[in-house]
Image 1 (cartoon, rainbow, N blue to C red):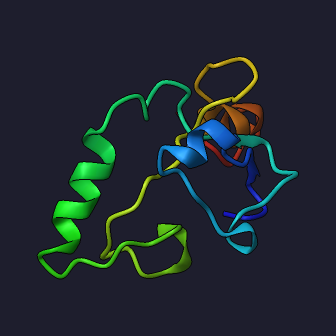
Image 2 (cartoon, one colour):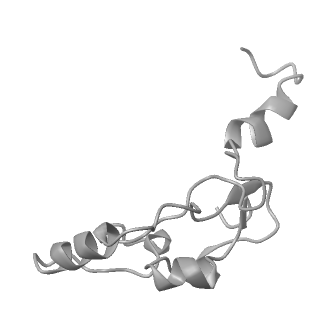
Length: 105
């Protein structure tokens, strides 16, 4: 995914509400925009859920994109941080290639 994604790190406000990441897990120059949702972390529910789940033995991870997905973690979405719109991998990778003769619809 590192080659495919253009990751936007969480803002200081998002980090204060629980969003986190490990830089080496993410790309910065790919065509698919990845960012944390702007309004996702507004209330205490996120932290409360995370704290509750860890009491049952589930590990809390800064970033589940490191190959150990059995955890509780805040995850970014396929969206643009600047335009607040979704970034669909289909339109980035396959749509431009749809004119190739070896791809059928």
